[in-house]
Length: 100
Figure 1: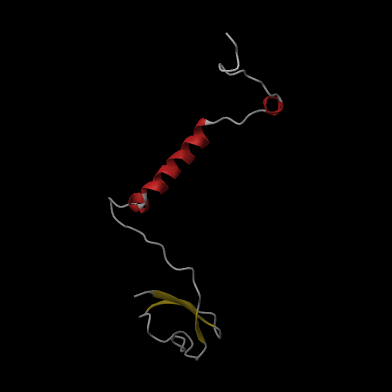
Figure 2 (figure 1 turned 90 degrees about the vertical axis):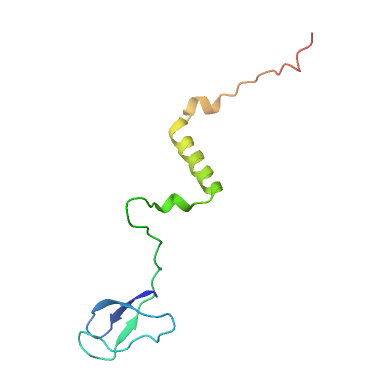
């Protein structure tokens, strides 16, 4: 069952309520008692594993892990070219171009 965020439009009180998905939103504010409570639209909750052996990245797909590793390597291993080296172009002849 999800936890919903509520806000009272009369007094401004905010609270969370653990409710069934099928349950209708409540209208009565627990603080002031007026019928001005409104369910807020939230972004949802992320999966959080609590405890000493669970990590959010444990259940990632192999393609995601490979992409993340490649991104880490490119960030740490590559140096940015200077402005001088980017304007110079060197032409290299391939071994097949040379005649013997």
